[in-house]
Image (tube, rainbow, N blue to C red; front, top):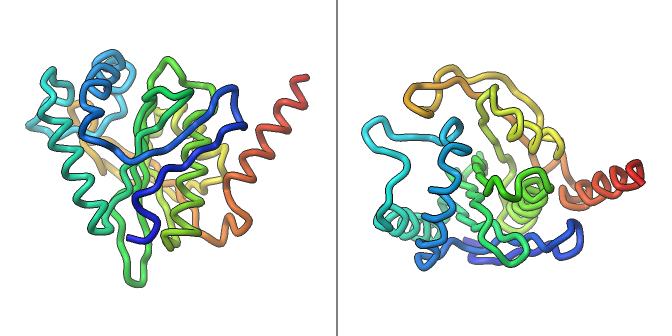
Amino acid sequence: MRGWPVTLTEPDLLDAPVGLRPVRVKDASVWRETRMRNAAWLRPWEPTNPETPLYQTSLGPYVAMARTMRREARQGQTLPWVVDYAGTFAGQLTVGSIVWGSARSAQVGYWVDQAVAGRGVVPTALAMAVDHCFFVVGLHRIEATIRPENVASRRVVEKLGFREEGIRRRSLHIDGTWRDHLCYALTAEDVQDGLLPRWRSAVSAARSRAS
């Protein structure tokens, strides 16, 4: 797939650098530690398999997931990134369910360590990912589906200008049952000058108002 593997960085926008780098199998230990520490924070919003527990203490589930993601990336089906903040593992952002042909669409999902939530890390990472997908990879549309109750995650996409396009009833199994999700989307025409420059301007404006 064009534009993969790739590492993206935004060194100056926030109080510490934000980066995206490909998921690695050797991230297993830090991934497990972060997920276990954030279990209560993530559980209400994480997709689950009705037959499989989300949080496990062994490294096996992560290793299997990472290998699957890396294989799918080579096949042009997904772009699986680790979110890096201040040189530290801070979460994941995955552009998946990629459809080529006449659609050129994908879905994005993300999670972040609660310790760095609210600092602009996820909007910055998502803006970098969207620009890379539109202007390098060649996608045309990116969707994010989010539970209506997940105000923090909705704020991420709303800050970046994603359109709300309606509700999908009982579309994903989350925290023990099937949940409704709001669909948000952007197309390449919506951000012809880039999403990251737009986000930089919004951050600068907010800092000016606060000073």
